[in-house]
Amino acid sequence: MKLKLPEHLAPADATAMKAVKPVICYPVDGLQAPDLVAYRAAREAWRKTHEVLVPPREARCFDVPAGHFFRIVSVEGPQVGDLNLWHATNHAERFFSGKTRALHGTHVSTGDRLWSNLPYLRPMATITEDTLDWYGFDEFGGSVHDVIGTRCDPYTHRLLSGGDYHHCCHSNLTRAFAAQTGRSQGEAEPFIHDVLNVFMCTGFTRDTGQYFMKATPVRPGDFIEFFAEIDLLGALSACPGGDCGVEHSSDTAKCSPLLVEIYVPSSPPKGWVSPAVNGFASLNDSKAKNVA
Ligand SMILES: [Zn+2]
Image (tube, rainbow, N blue to C red):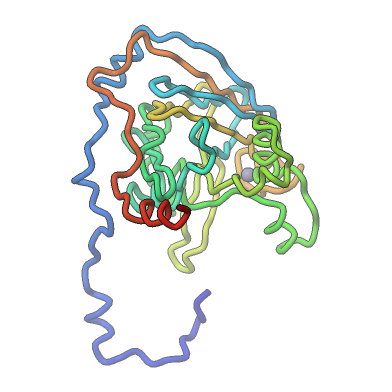
C-alpha cells in the first residue's frame, strides 16, 4: 500500500530518475526456444489415453508421462481452473509460478514454459496451443492464464471476511493431492503451491497496482494444451469463483466442470529430449556433504 500523499519530499532529480527506461530483468533470448513445429507434428497421430472431469468446486489429479500432451478444456460454461504440477515421483519438485512469471511475464501462452522450483529449475511443461491467445492485453492491462495470483484459500478468506469456506482452490487441491498420494490432508497441504490460473482474466490496476480479476472470456470448446517435458502429476481445481467475474471463495458464483484430456503421440517430437535438472550443482553438493 502506498499513501495517497507521500510523507517524504522527492529529491531534485526525481523526474530524471523516473524517466530512466526499464530493462528486462531476465532476457530469455538465451533460452532454447521450444520447437513448436516438431511438437505440433507429433500431435498428428496422437491418441487420447484418458480424461478426467473436474467437478465444479472440486479438484482432481491426473498423471501425464513425459512426452505426452494434456489439454484443459472448457466444456459447459465459463470456468477458471487452478493448476498445480509436481514431478510424478519426486513431489518436492513442483511448479514455480514466481520464476515462470519472471521469465515469461505475468500471463503465459503458446511457446511459454512452466518451470519447476529450485534447485531443479527445468521446464515441466510447454504450452503448445492456447485458443484464447487472441485476447492479448485489454485496456485495463488484463490478460488470460496468469502466474500472478496464488490460489483462493480459506485463510485469506477468513482474514478478509471472517467466515470459513471449505471449497477454495487451496482446499480442493489439498484434498485431491492427499487422495492421490495416500497422504493425510495435513501432510498434503505443504505440497500445494502457487498455481497457473488457467483461463482466468486478471491484471494489476494501473493506479494502485492491485490484483484484479474480470470475467474470463473462455467458452465451451476453448482449451489450453501442454506438452509434458517430464513425468508429471497434475491437480486441477474448478475454482468456486466460476468465471471469476464477481467473487470467489463462496457458493455464490455459477460454476462449471473442466475437462482434462491426456494424449500420447505415436512418436515423440523430432529431436525432443526430456530436460535434465538444472546444471548448477554446488549448493546440492554442499548439502550432500552436510548430510554425509
Ligand atoms: Zn480458486
